[in-house]
Length: 64
Image (cartoon, rainbow, N blue to C red):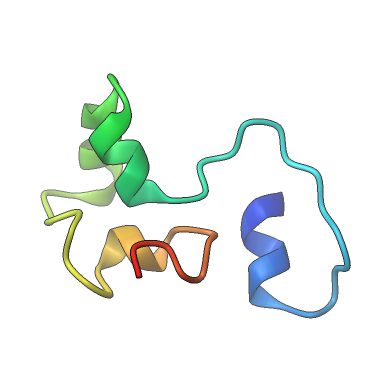
């Protein structure tokens, strides 16, 4: 949540997150537990521009 919050508002100047997922598409492609995100995000294409994987990623430019 810390990684996501600092990208959504100017309220926070800094945040500390321990081992966050900052790009869901990258996590899907490189993690051995990629089936977890399929269960929770649905059977959608992780590489779809502007799709659910990109929208839920804390990094505002993930995949661009």
